[in-house]
Image (tube, rainbow, N blue to C red; front, side, top):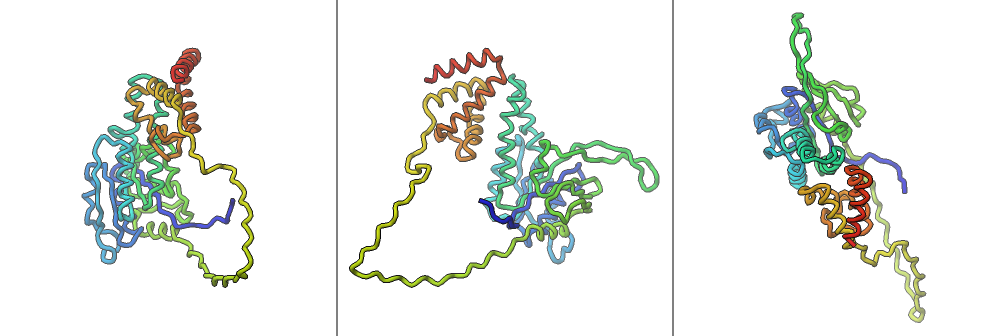
Length: 358
């Protein structure tokens, strides 16, 4: 079951956050350009084509590495998580080396983002906790798209901003813009290998890292040197050498002797020959009755998310849900009913729904 842990070749997951003007987009491009020689870079742009302003800009060692070249995909409102996932998957399936998402904050707080969708659900009534439960699967799908991509991914995020008064070199008090944390779900930084907090002077503070060489570092205008460190850290172990063994010489059997019959194989604990039992008609009826009561017009969209969750991502179609998986799904729906109704009303509703579905 267990084996010795070895470092394998992995793809980078890096995030940069900071106030506007901190240099997040340019730093992301610089790091991407240094991460892979002659990198093909895909940039998903939610910032009104602002990344295109950097096309052709040079980086350190421009004579050797040339100008930054990249391809962009413009994303406009509404900033639905499904649009992010589609763009990430499209870039992952293409021949790009590095994907930059600039920025992920719109998926959370932008028009059509998670927060706005949650507010719309609250306005239609229902339990706030239950409404969060409807949005969490979407957020988790975005995380999975980032984590499971076949490419290096660099994400930028805006930060909550305020101004503080500092003294400049001449002793004069001047307002300085500082970031107070990423505009995204709390704890989102833990999904990344390296998380950089950038300030208005283009300093990148390594606030979280799995790369020991970067622990506690402050890097001004992160670029090729940081990329070199990351590339070394991401390096692969040499593949094990497999020595081919000579084939054994065939053993000649006497013509008159019959080979012994093979010993019977032990039957497996699970019978893989039988087809798994799908959701019953009664389960399907209960699912639709409870789902329509809880989610109204949003039931069609929510149902696909719930099905994907209980099947471990195997499917989004309720017609492919197994009987055991349907039980888990119905338990989740019943728990939501109990959270939004009085105990008496919930018990009566569930009993009547079950009776009608039989």
